[in-house]
Amino acid sequence: EHTGVQGYVYISTECFACHPDGTAEGAFNHTLSQFPLLGAHLAANCIDCHQTGYASTPKECVSCHENSFATAQNPNHTSLGLSSDCASCHNSEAWTPSLFEHQSTGFELLGQHTSAICADCHINGTVNTPNQCMDCHEDKYATAPDHQSSVYPTNCDMCHNSTAWNQTTFDHAQTNFPLSGAHTSTVCSDCHSQGFTGTTTICVDCHIDDFQNSTNPNHQSLNIQNTCETCHNTEPGWSPAQFPDHNTVFALIGAHSAISNDCQSCHNGNYITTATECFGCHETDFNSTIDPDHAAANFPVECESCHTQSAWIPSTFDHDGQYFPIYSGQHQGEWNNCVDCHTVVTNFSLFSCIDCHEHNQSSMNNEHQGVQNYSYNSIACFDCHPDGGDKILIKKSQFEER
Image 1: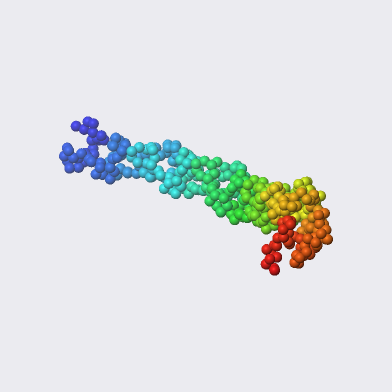
Image 2 (image 1 turned 90 degrees about the vertical axis):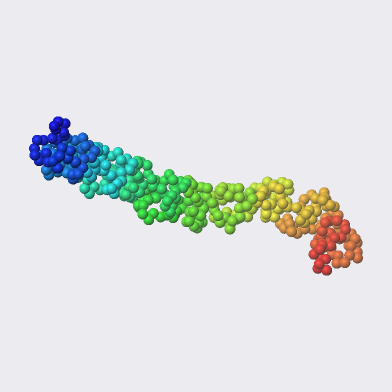
């Protein structure tokens, strides 16, 4: 009658186990026991678990699966000292895969850690396993370029993540000193020679040698402030440099603004005695000008009286419009050299009308009979004849005076 009945044994206690009410239909319902059958246990033979009978059968997994625990290799449960509480990692569906959640330990497996063998980290078992990167990666730290110096921190996760050791994740832009220009290719230890804590962000603290050894210009002899960022940025070679206070010394406008970064053009390596007068740089222009010949005419060397910073040519000097018509009117073609009128070659503010070949005092006296306040001198001539013509023109200033 019991052919095919799983776990059948001809013992009274076994009869009662399946027929507790004495009826043929009252077969034992394992679900009502303290160990409901689930997963792989549903297909198991009763004798597999009840080898010594049905009374006091142990419910701990390891009681039946001690051999599985002892022979497991990935990971090796015995060598790692894993707990024999199988239910903490496995269920009754199957021995594998394990349901152990590593993140429950406080150390979530990410990146390359997900494929690591447990024994790689749990060398001495799973109890009190170190969870600091250096505990496992000290060899990588020791062989990494520059890490041998004492300045590098040992908290690896400051610069690395679990995806790949050689992919640093430290973002310097999130600090109070974002890297730009030449700093982006600088070796960390160049700035962090004393460690990574409290590193200065003041330029001169790292570049004092550059400041002291600068010769173009000589920063120390000129008493230039050592606030490097005033004139420099982070581009390689300290150039182009800017000198924002230059206008307080010499305003760079016009053509000068185009060479504002070509300091050598004006300073020629000497930033101490550089002339601020135009002639100091433009003496060659002055001497080589022939229309008119500045040197021969003994022109004053105050270039700005005739020229601007926009260009040497054209000159802004307008003798006819500003002073006296010599290129038009009755004096056009009546003179050859500036010295004809400007008899004092060192002072062009002085001029002479009465020295002209057409004038003499006797004839001028005759022509000016009856002219009030007539005087035979050049200033008087100009006051009445400001355009050089025969007709007397009284200046507005004279009219107001009278």
